[in-house]
Amino acid sequence: MLRLFNPETSFTFSVAKILWLGRYSVGFISFLHFNKQFHLFSTHNNSILSHIAYDGRTIGFTLNNKEFTLKVTAIKNSSGELRAPESGKMSRKIKESIDSVVTISLFDKDNNMVYNDLARRAGLEIIEKIFEYLDVKIPIQV
Image 1 (cartoon, rainbow, N blue to C red):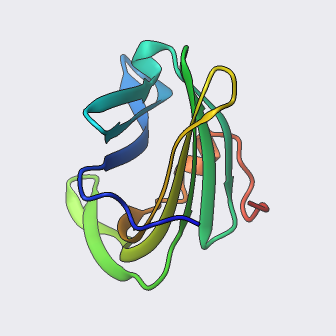
Image 2: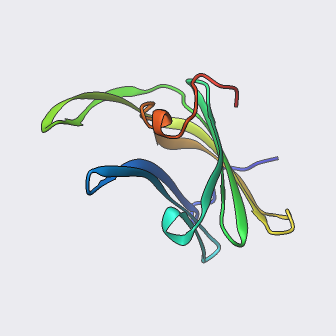
Image 3: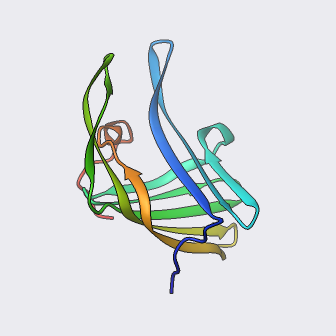
């Protein structure tokens, strides 16, 4: 049985299209901090986003670095609409949730579960356009 996130636990994940000298690449950064341990997954430390699936409400993804595998599932509940910048104007609209349910599992190289937890009041913002750059067709099954 999963429990609510330990109040000492922090987690974040962000993926973006990064423009540089007229070209772009997709990069990500994620970290999990618990029990005074910091686990970083990012394109800068050669981690990979080995799996991502999204069906319009639920997103699941897997990150791998040299030592660990991080599996995350997030379910978007209610959301509010926010304005965001686009071409210098606040004309883009995004949906953000503050009551999403997030499950996190961390595994070592031998596939032993190192950490497993669940949060019921997580912030979640999914901008579906990023899936165009990840070669993910939506909706797909999680």
